[in-house]
Amino acid sequence: MLAALRFIWNATRGHRLTPWRSEYLRWRVETYSGQKAETLTARSVLGFLWTTRWELLSFLRWTGRLEREARGRG
Image 1 (cartoon, helix red, strand yellow):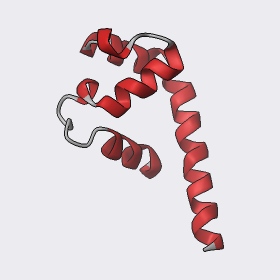
Image 2 (cartoon, one colour; image 1 turned 90 degrees about the vertical axis):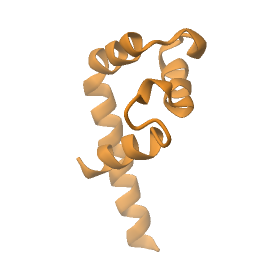
Image 3 (cartoon, rainbow, N blue to C red; image 1 turned 180 degrees about the horizontal axis):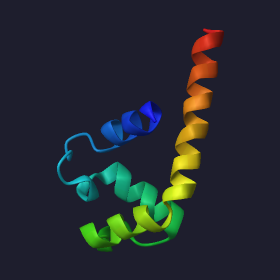
């Protein structure tokens, strides 16, 4: 879960209280869902996060494993 929080913290840099305004997060939502980043609103971003929450958590667990492995090899 720490990897998930770290990702959210880094992805929303400069937009902590309004994460849907984060350029990086908007780009990731656009890449994954096909919705245009310029048209994303708070509601659409939060709806996307809610409907894909299990896939996103799985992805964040995977990135956490990769990060731990990379540190172990360093």
